[in-house]
Image (cartoon, rainbow, N blue to C red; front, side, top):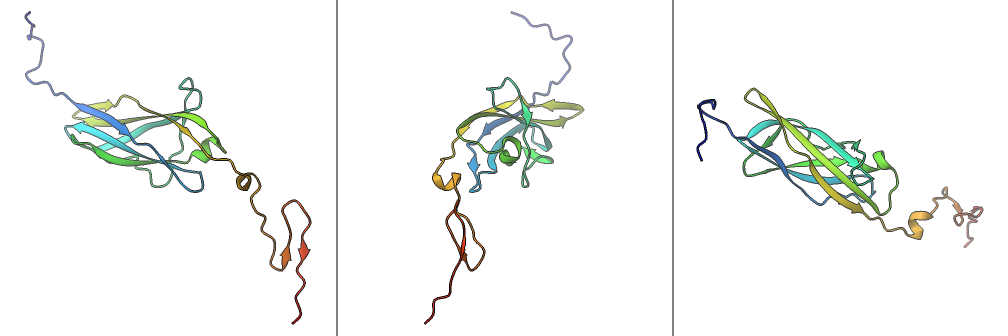
Length: 166
C-alpha cells in the first residue's frame, strides 16, 4: 500500500496530552472534602496547563454538575511532563451534595493547554467511586454540650450542678 504524502507538511508534531490517572481519594475526618491526586502527561512538556472541567454525577453519568474546588486545589499553571506529573484536586463534597451515605459517584476531569498555536484538550478522565460513611448512634445523636456548671442528657432537661460541701 502506498500513502500519498504530497499534502502533508514537512514535519508533523504529535502531541501526547492526557490525564492518565486519578487516585483513590482520601476523605478528611469531617467528611467534607475528598482529595485526589491527578497524574498529567504531556509530550512535549507543557508548563501552562489549566484544569478546565471537574464535574460529578450522582446518576451514573447521565447528568453532570460542577464540583466545587477546595482550597489547595491545583487548577492553573500546571506542568504536565512525559513521565507524568502529579497534581492535587480537593473537592468540597459537602458543599455540593450535603450529607451522604453510601452514594455511588462519578467524577470527570478535563484539562487544556496551548501547544504552539493550538489549544488542546485532554479527553475526560472519569473516576467512579462509592463514598461510605458509617452511620452510628454518635453521628445521629451527637453528645450535647451543656454550659459550664450544668449537666444533663441529650433530649432531657438540664440541671444546675450543686456544689458538694466538704
